[in-house]
Image (cartoon, rainbow, N blue to C red):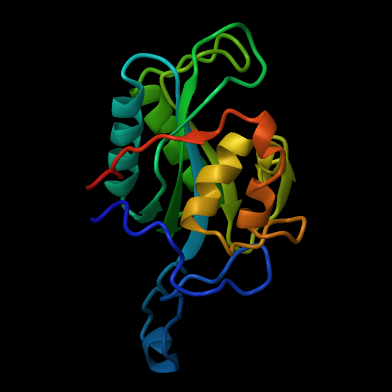
Length: 207
């Protein structure tokens, strides 16, 4: 499954939390009457990945590879890698961050569980809040879903506050409309001069 296509959106996004994914139709009446189970609809989702322990870029590449290898997940776009200073938590090294666009038939909770499983498999430890980590996968947006559940808040509650999220997101989906009505490109320009969100010239990952 190809990963990391051209980071530019091919057409403007329509207003709303997320554009609609293609290929989400149901069964015809005849097939439904025959007892066939309708396919699960495909939905767009956006994730933020980060690492500041060990082989940081290798951790990101492996997390993207595992996402792409998950049944029900198609990785559509992967941003460049950005190096950013840590936000909050104890003193620690800089992060490498990127954003990923996926089309998925998994539910939001199933996608979250997939992210948490990848984190655990790659050695993520949760002993210190906002502490250093081998890998971090955050679900930012999921098409058509909002949630105030503390275990899964959608859109991500700190999406609009983090340049290390907004800059990679704007690269792969500049016209994506965010919860506050701005596009990702517009939001990414917020406080840019006070941020260390400098793009590094690295190739995109390939599956």
